[in-house]
Length: 63
Image (cartoon, rainbow, N blue to C red; front, top):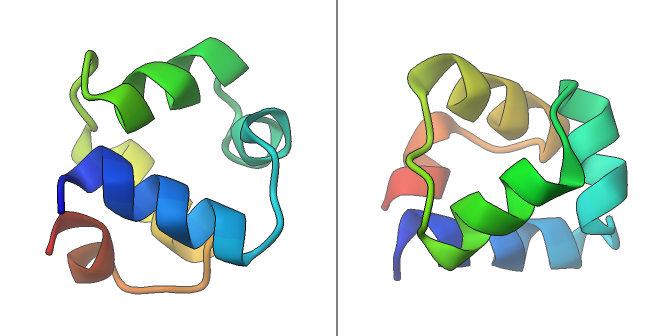
């Protein structure tokens, strides 16, 4: 699975919309959408924030 697919799977398992997740990590919904589709690269700081909000390890996003 790609990083974007992992983020989408974890986001959906927590019943977050893209907008809710974006608000929680202080980015736009468009940014989350682009990361999930693989058209934008995930930065380490944003990955850490996403992992915190999604209650997982950074490795869970990148595995």
